[in-house]
Amino acid sequence: MELLDVSLVNWSRAQFTLTAMYHWIFVPLTLGLGVIQAIMETIYYRTGDEKWKKATKFWMTLFGVNFAIGVATGIILEFEFGTNWSNYSWFVGDIFGAPLAIEGILAFFMEATFISIMFFGWNKVSKGFHLTSTWLTILGATLSAFWILVANAWMQHPVGMEFNPDTVRNEMVSFWQVLSPFAWNKFLHTVISSWIVGALFTLGVSAWFLIKKRDTDFAMKSIKVAAVFGLVASILTALTGDGSATNVAKHQPMKLAAMEGLYKGQKGAELVAIGVLRSDVQLNDTSDAFLFKIGIPKALSLLAFNDLNAYVPGINDIVNGGYVAHKTSQTALSFDEKKLRGNLALKSLADYRKAVAEKNDSAATASRATLMANYDYFGYGYLDKPEETVPRVPLIFYSFHLMVILGTFFIALFGIFTFLSFKSRFNFENGRWLLYIALWSIPLGFIASQLGWIVAEVGRQPWAIQDVLPVKASVSAISAMSVKITFFLFLTLFSALLLAEVRIMLKQIKKGPSQEH
Amino acid sequence: MLNKIFNLYRDGFRNMTVGRTLWAIVLLKLFIMFAILKVFFFPNFLNSKFKSNSEKAAYVREQLIDKSH
Image 1 (cartoon, rainbow over the protein chains, first blue to last red):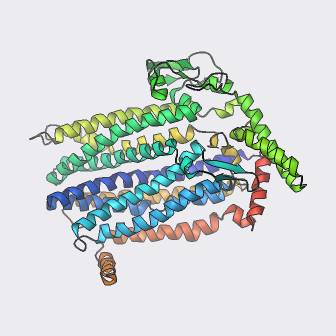
Image 2: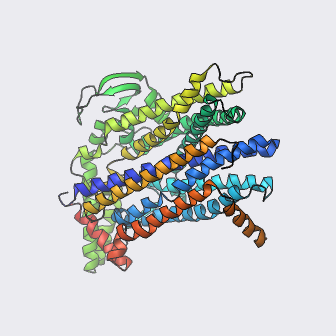
Image 3: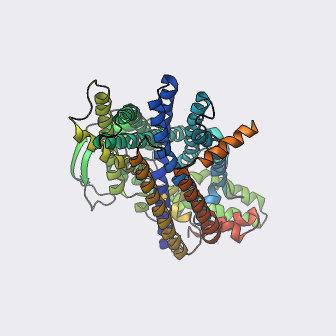
C-alpha cells in the first residue's frame, strides 16, 4: 500500500463528502416540498377555494427558490467521478452508465417541461392540466432520485454484473438484478424521509406566521397538510428503515454491527436504545464496548432478521469468521480467508494480463477462471490488516442513534400537530411554545437526513463497492494539491449558493402568501 | 398550438419577479460549473491521457494491479 497517497485519498474523499452533503441540503427539500405543493393544488382543484391556490403558489415559490439554487449541484459529483475517481468510474462505468443516462433524460424532459407549465401556466392552461404538470414535476424529480439511488444501492450490494478482465469493467448482465430489493428499499427510505424534510419546513414556516400573527388562515391550512403528510411520511420512514436494517444485516453485516456498537455477536441480540461507547475499544477486545447503555432485549435480532433469537454477528465475529449466517448453511469466512481470495483474484488479473500479452490462451482461460471464482473478494487484496475493514464505529453508532431519536421525535411532533390542528377551536394561542418547537425543528429534518447518509456511506467504508473495490484503489493518480484547491473552490461556491438560498427564502417568506412573488 | 406555447414562455419570463434573480443565479452557477470548473479543474482524467478504450482499460488494469502491491 506504500504506493498510495493517503493525502490524495483523504482529500478526494473529503471533497466528495462536502459536495454530496451540500447537494443533499437541496434535494430532500425539493422532494418534500414538491409533494406538499401538489397536495395543496389538488385540494384547490377539488374545492375551488382560492385560498388553497394562494397557499399553493406561496409554497411553489419557495420550491422554485430551492430548485433553482440546488439544480445541477449534483453534476459536480459527476465531475469528481471523472477526475478524482477515474479507476472507480472506469471499473463501474457500464453499471452506472445506464441508470445515470436514464436519470439525465428523465430529469431534463420531465422536470424541464412540466416545471415551466407549473410556474408559467396559471390561468394559461386548464386547472386539470396545471395540476397534472405539478404532479409530473415532482414525479420527474423523484424518478431522477430513483436512478441515482439505484446506482448507490449497487455500490452497497453489487449484483447483476460480471467483471470483464479485458475491458476491466463490471458489465451489466441483468438490469432487473441491479434493481434489487436493496435498491427499492433505499429509494423508498430515502425519498419518503425527504418528505419529512419538506413537511418540517412547511410546518415550521407556518408556525412562524402564527407566532407573528400573520396570515393565520393560510398558516393553519398549511399546518394541517404538513402535519398529516409529515406523520404519514415519518411512520413510513420508520417502516422502510426496518427494511433497510434487514438488507444491511444480510449484505453489510459490518455496517449493522457498527451501527449498534456490537463487537461480540449474540443470539437474541439487544438493540441499544441509548448508549455511550468507550473510546478505546480495539478489535477483538472482549470487554464491554459501552461505558453506559440501555438496551431493548432481542430487538436487534428482530429488527435485523425478523427473529427474536437470530444470531447477529459482531465486529470481532465478522473479522474472525467461523459463524453461520442466519438462515443459511454457509460458514462466514474470516478476514484472512477473504484476503487470501482477494490476493488470488488480483494475482489472476495480473496473470491474465501476462497470458493475453503472450497469446497463451490456455493460461488466460485458467487465470480468468480463478479470477471469477474469487472475484467476490477482489477488494480484500488491497487490504493489509483486519482493522481496515472496520468503519468508524462511534461516528456510525451516534449518527444512527441520533437519526432514530429524531425520527421518533418527528412522529410525536407531527402527531401532536395533526391532533391539534384538526381539533375545533384550537388555534395555538394557548400553545405558542409548540409553534416555537415546530419552527426550530426545521433544521432537524436536514440533520436527520444527513445522518442517514453518514450511516449509509461511512458505514460501508473501506469500500467504494462492497467487498470488490476499496476507496483507496478507486482514486486517480492526480496531485493531492489539485484536489485541495477544488475542495476550497467548492466550499466557497456551495456556501455562496446556500447563503443565497437562505436570503431569498427569508425574503419570500417575509412577503407572505398575500403578495406577488 | 406552437403560438400558445411561445406565449406561455414569453409571458412567463416577462412576468417573473423573484424568478429573474433565480435565473441569474442559475446561469451564473452553470457558467462557473461548466466554463470554469469543468474546463480548468475537472478534465476527465482518462480521456485526457488516452484516446482509445483499450488504452484506458490497460491503464486502469495496471493501476488496479499496482495498487495491490
